[in-house]
Image (cartoon, rainbow, N blue to C red; front, side, top):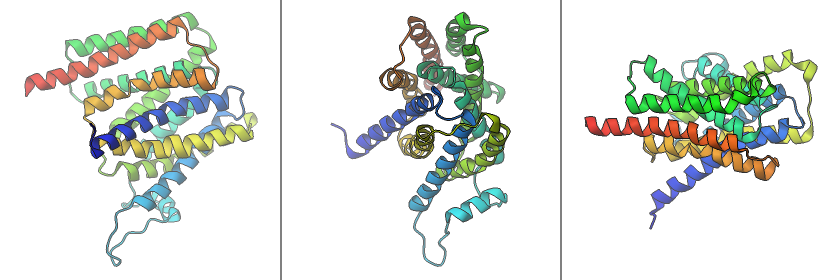
Length: 310
């Protein structure tokens, strides 16, 4: 029987994974028609996320004696982020990577279905983090190399029939989104306060998105449903979703955290079928097994090596 702590970890993990998958479903619902242009969707999503995370920081900040309490009103949060004050958290580099992820994510979902987009994004994130670990001096072992090669084969199998089609354009954009999120994740690994760092990064990412939207005014489209989906994606499935994930991570081993994320593309695929009326193709199912199997091989290969060296 689960104790209170185990139940809390299980519940927060499930909610976070559902939130991650819901981001793909919401983007597809908004952009398939389209009821909103990708630039506006990105900007509204980031603004909504920044506001929600700022509210969470205000609510969850630690209690301190009255004379020493640090107050973070939303206006002050924005001022600190923009003025490069030392007390501000996060960084402009991480904020740009967040914007790169969010922007490419939105434009990719104009042409990709929910399941394919989630699979490409997740695979690109994991592969980016693996490659970055190589550049940092870590060596891959035989099983890890085998898993990495297998994942690449899965990607090739997925896109091969669509070379030269809009799907290839979407694949490239979603891969860039995955690279952006992968770099963002690696940069945030050493964060002492991930919620506060994420809040400042969202705040800093807004000007990037706003500037990009201004360049895309000729394609401006703002339908009410699209705006609602963008707000929900930013405030709930991104802002609150990330906060819940940080709570879950406190009680998850790194290997477990990596493995459970393998379920996100699968959950997104189910969401696409249920809410976007999409269908699953045999090619997508096979490529999902190959790609996620390869990443799983890398994860367990790394974990088993650590156990042997202890």
